[in-house]
Amino acid sequence: MEIILKEDVVNLGYKDEIINVKDGYGRNFLIPQGKAIIASASAKKVLAENQKQRAHKVAKIKQDAHDFAAKLEGTTLVIGAKTSSTGTIFGSVSSIQIAEELAKKGFEVDRKMIYLTEPVKEVGNFVAQVRIHKDISVEIPFEVISET
Image (cartoon, rainbow, N blue to C red; front, side, top):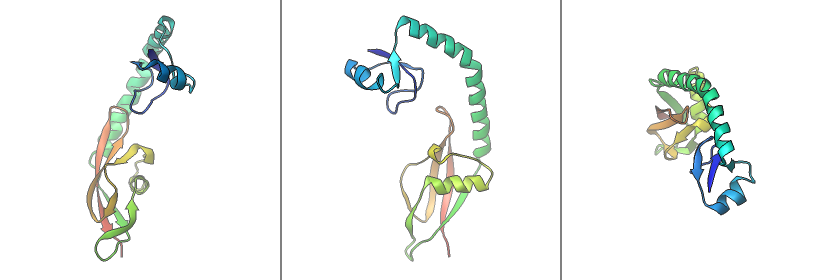
């Protein structure tokens, strides 16, 4: 079954993509949930017209994301955390603390855009990935130090 996604669906596709899914998944989940519509000829024409009209806006959004990524590129962070005598953190460093440190440096980044590949539970150097746009991401190195 060919459908058009109305919103981003994890591990399936992005908004306004035409994809093939199994009939049951499309009819019983995606369409009733409002996440997709059937890709009929008229729906495809409407989608093409909407994409043509939106192309300028999308280009502007992408350019803004590139500019923000360029500003964010050279940033490094130092995050203080309470630790034991062996260097293990009480709790862990999360995307919330990274977002707060970026805000202190003047970068407003939503914590949901920050991804850590592994939990940060000890002192050391790590890397967080900030996904600004679906095609644009920046790696931010950060160091976790022990607070006294």
